[in-house]
Image (cartoon, rainbow, N blue to C red; front, side, top):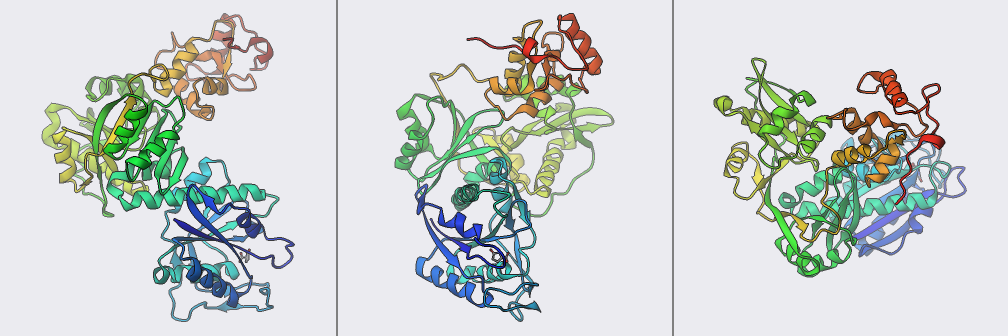
Length: 527
Ligand code: PCA
């Protein structure tokens, strides 16, 4: 894809304009995408003229215009342009506007067609301060954006305006990096949208998960999922490209979610693979919400319902996984007359599923009710409402069909390496529990330390959640986990800080002012 990127010259009292500094520092190729950089004048009447000339000359697929917004504290992804020019400072040609329309008879506002939630999530998860902004101001940037968006169809590109803060908030190299992240994410979105039904899972992950994009360009898409479980999403346009993506996998890869059958062949060439599930994706593509019967009470499951769910869920018998889904607030039950009769949930990767209904309440169509409810919930939250149907599950195909979901072919596969590069994967919560079990009596560990050992150093809060929901507080000594300053947990789940203190004292640990001397008591692993 070709990206045209613009920055502005300095204006008003600024000696430099970081937008142009950041854009001009970009390479001319990135993940095989072509990048062209152009500097624009801060002049109402000239900026679009200069940009249009560059568009005609380079025929870009995407145009990202950047400008400086001194008062902002984050990268602002501008959602819309307003049909107005109104500013207290003149442009670089000395022209001042106060309240004139950019285009007489034009619409009041125009919106970008790019998915800003995906772009926001990709920057935000990379810890770049980012916001979605509803106003690009009423000065030259907004003026340029209005023209950029009005001419999208004529020239066949997608346009976006990005305001950068000044360099006291973000360095130029951070800004350039942010632009490269945007390019990856825009390419990935475009690639996935071209074959939407088979890639809806990747789009949802881009929108809401902590994905690290390894490659996004003409050879397809490869990302590492780095939250609780590690696996890769792969999609390549042909076998040759699939081989290229395989060459980018790190040595210790274990599980890949493929999107074309030849990707499994490419994986088999580098290591014998086992295909766990071949699925089709079913997506609810409508905007309208589904009707509900309201014949049951739908609310989140709690860990008190864990045994109920674990006894009934047919797909994989892993209680820790269900405990985690419940603790993350992503499972819901249907109660009829105060009795739990079935449940539904979201898988870790964002697919709807984990649906079971007790046989004696099937006549109430609780499956339909639960799934309709979840689809409505997802649609209202701007999520992609999709599920994965394992080949052969005709009952599920029937239900999805009745609810109006659209199916992809059976192309999506969860494939695992036969010879494990690493020991068998555990769910993140199980890993946490195993590690905590290993903390010896008389020692403590910090949340961050556990996250680090579990291989997800960023998942400190998830460690807290896992311990807060400790399924077996007698054998998993969660009282031995403290903050990075050695503090007890004020809301220790099993009786508060006082209870935690007395358990630690039983272990022989001295505590002063709710704090433990980590130099003395921290568990250090020696290998
Ligand atoms: N920022 C100005 C115009 C040029 C720039 O970098 C704006 O926000 O309108």
